Image (cartoon, rainbow, N blue to C red):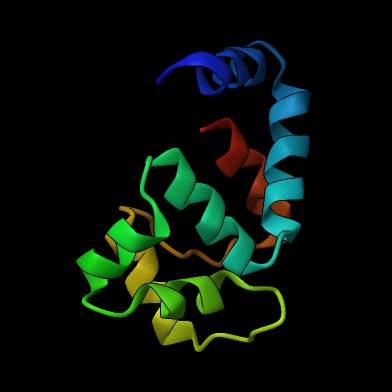
Length: 100
């Protein structure tokens, strides 16, 4: 972890309220946007992700586009490729999950 990500992690650890707000804001983003953020945090280009998924790069771009409503199966496959999980979290549990 370097630079901004390290700074953000330290900030969120020092301020639990900020961590909860960060988690809430992230959870409100469209899944396609969350996926794009996590892909970039893993330092993967769309081309590299497409290669891992054995699909054309434009398909990754379309999946991450807000104008496109990707199938949940596409999001799931891409999430696994960037070493992430999809998880439904009840609102009342979001704070506990954010602090973990």
